[in-house]
Image 1 (cartoon, rainbow, N blue to C red):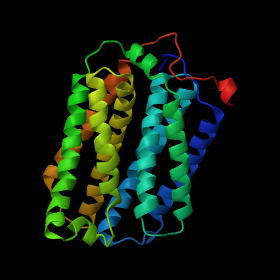
Image 2 (cartoon, rainbow, N blue to C red):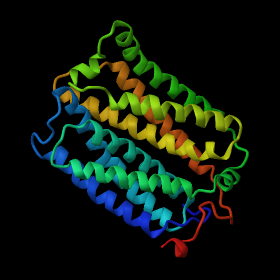
Image 3 (cartoon, rainbow, N blue to C red):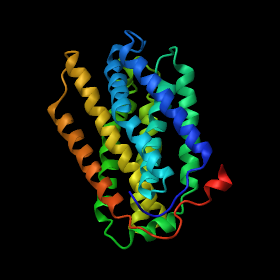
Length: 284
């Protein structure tokens, strides 16, 4: 992973190490301590699936990407940001949705640590330098994928929200989970869908920040798709029926996002210029 030089300041390294430790604790307890979660039964396969994907995929990916980023890899730095974005989304949902348990303070600590690392890490990127390191390669596949995902997510949630809004009732996914509202609705429709649309627009206009957020969102979808498949596995284990179409769709989205992510990362060519602003010495 030898490419343009980057630097990861010591506060972000320490924050990432803390995130790794707390995430391993949270997921291990959630998966292996019997009856730890106090949520409605319909939610349990979701949290178990999320914990499994986080422990098996996200934790190793975060550790490896940090290792390469510290060694000066732009690709490692971009993947580190993407996994950090996934963990920010995950522990925002845990902090706001999961029924109170003994790990509540761990969830809130992970929320602010991932927010600090993600925002700070993005702010340090020189988007123009990253764009130059990629060159004039075609961005149409990424634009199409971003728009497709924005439409799929919007359709998925609006197909539940609009009928309930018109009839004055509560969507079944909220009622069955015994929740006052859905944090996932809010995060996806308020942040993720607009991010896909804005990133597609930026890429269409060859705006540098479109290149930055493309990989971050591709990592998000790859991990989201994997988490949904893990959730489906827990639901099947518990005797619930999972539509085959759902498994096929999310499996395909996961494979496509991984393919496009690898394609995008491989398009980053070595450059002598610095893609991440600042220096390790100044920021330590």
